[in-house]
Image (cartoon, rainbow, N blue to C red; front, side):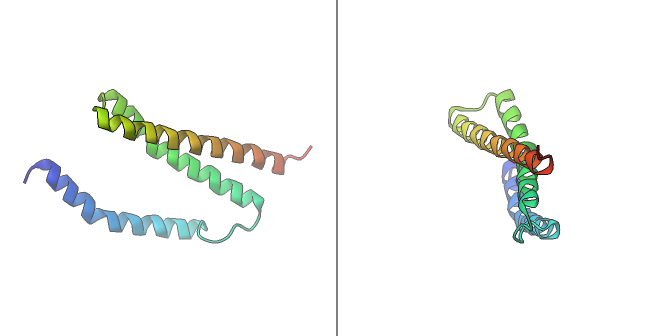
Length: 104
């Protein structure tokens, strides 16, 4: 077996453990319960947007740095769109949270 197949097998074996850890983290942070108020809802959106930034930004940098093949360019475009949508949602939630906490 070559290195790519071993990496694929390791990823397939590790995926359930990673999914369980993410589930435990989300449950521990209270993301799986309904929000208590609007502030908590906006905070959750901001945290999810930051996680999307941490996840998708390196993917874009790596892909463009390695000059993606043509088919992977579609993946890069999709990653960029997801990153942009999450950034807009995070900024909108941050502004809404600021308005809730600092009424004029």
